[in-house]
Length: 305
Image 1 (cartoon, rainbow, N blue to C red):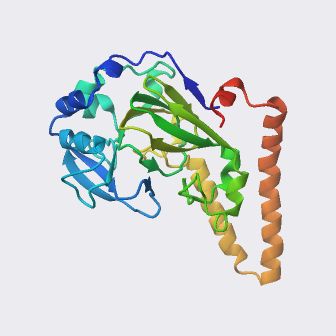
Image 2: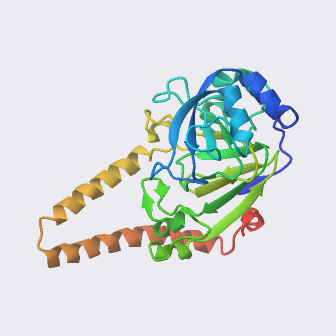
Image 3: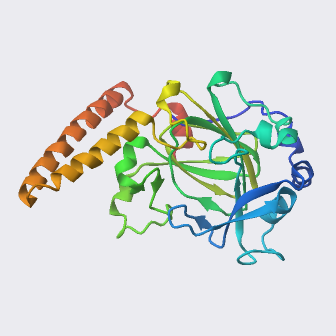
């Protein structure tokens, strides 16, 4: 279950990572950033553009409420998700992309070194909210500078979140359009506000939505908790479905295509049988979980809104 962890040593970053220090250490290294005139950034609708800036220029702009220099508008927002040297093949690693900053950050020992997958530097303009999505790996989100709100939804609420791939179509989770997304109200919302020094454990498949309440700097650490051959080796972001799940979804698509060969009444009948089969498998697992834990554990109660 998700949990906010406090008092874990993160190194000297909590004292050192001021705006001036970040600009100095990052220097003029070019970074690819998201730029949006909207406060709610949507990956599905691409209401942002990618631009390249020197790191020191980027952090200065990201901390501003209004810009003299801008790409879209004077109140545009910025978001950096650090990438590997070859973004299509190599996961992000703070130690490789920003070695001088990495010296200040201590990776907590909650997983074995050989399980490590990536350490992602995330920097957001104040007020910027990112789309709801899930990852297939367990991860820790360390908040270093500023405060950040995180809203989470259980994997068991996936049917209420209107998914396209790993992302929810519901952009405005605070005031959703219930005519368009009527099932969304059934999803149970968990919420926390991360202060500098806080760690949020986000288990695999838990949906999360973040909003920077202030200029925000954090580090995301992902690790492999399944067998190594479960993962897609061509996934540098850690968000591609496990290989077995991908094969299952592909098989489902083929099965649905086969149903299209039948007349409407037959297709409806056998589709209902398929749905029932999937439900019986999924809900049997869910009942076992409910019997083993009738109430949310303390760490969930701590962050539940």
